[in-house]
Image (cartoon, rainbow, N blue to C red; front, side, top):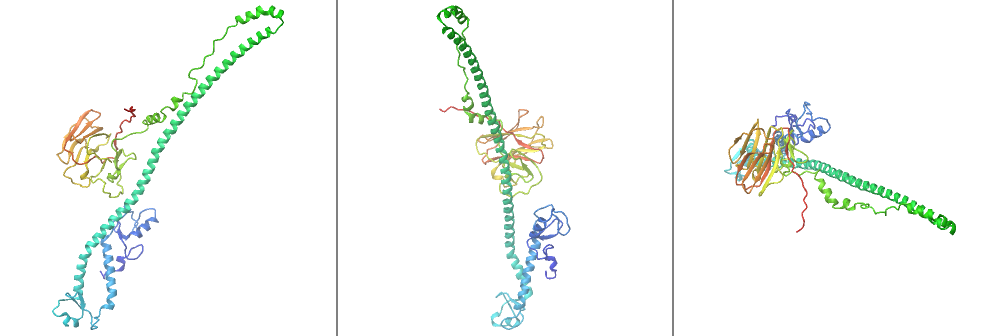
Length: 467
């Protein structure tokens, strides 16, 4: 190691001994902090030496180079201290031997002294090499443990960053959903207030017309009454002369029918306010949906993307995701958020034009085991072929008349049956029989860019009388 130049152990960016070195795909190594600082000042992730673009934002550690740098640093420390300690403190002779019994360096005079009688000795260079090898053996598990802790810390750092990303995405999607509900409520409010104003306008106009008609009748009657009263105020002779004509006029004038009050003239308050919140809630089912299975993005393979409403999944570019324990170890798959350990459950999957998919259930105890003895029951479609497969049985070819596009998965946990139906052909595709003991999670797999979708079920509102 001493024959190697300082340049071999220097970072090309800071020109100091490597600290926590990482290696790029072009084989150049840099301090991790130096590389990240360099990239933060550039628009692209380029190698500071050869300017090749790096495909990884978090390059792997160069553990071999790190160990070499640490060993060189330790060797330098030893050489620096050896200058003042290479003479025997008792005899002022050069320390040329190492006593294996006392584990100390001695001079030739010490070797022949009573203190070291019958002891075993080695030349300093041989003993130093042997001790270095022994120390390396002791250091190896510590270094391995340190590497493990560093890796776990990196995972924790990545998890912390992903938590913030998840929180931001979830907040945005929640706001979108609430805005949808707010918009529905605003539109419903405007419609109901509009209906109230329309009824008010109609009934006010009707009442106005009725009032105007009554006013005209009153004016006509008042005119006739005033004329008769004018006749009666005349002198007796004049009154008697005009009486026959006045009487005839009054008798010939038809009397109008008695005015009747208008029925339903008032605002129908009961129609507008009666069970208002219930009626709005009942109508809200037109804008809301319910999925019997909710996909859990925390279980999805990094090469899958789950839709914002957690009802669809498809293949995508590989993502940098935390290695959380919940993430499914089966590639290109995702699980439902809720497991079933009793009862009957069913959900429908729309496969559409997807040509590479699997649907079924997965046992909870094998989620972290890549090669379980049992626990996965599924049907799969690939290369135009439909197959039934379980880890507790053999693979079985199925021969449907045509490719199923909508599959109903029905789990009877207590009855030990898992069935698959083709909804469009209304036929049974396959049935698994097994005594289920573990909690089962809905399972979906795809390597296609086309969506697999959990179909929503109809939402209804029922009114039940109290007993």
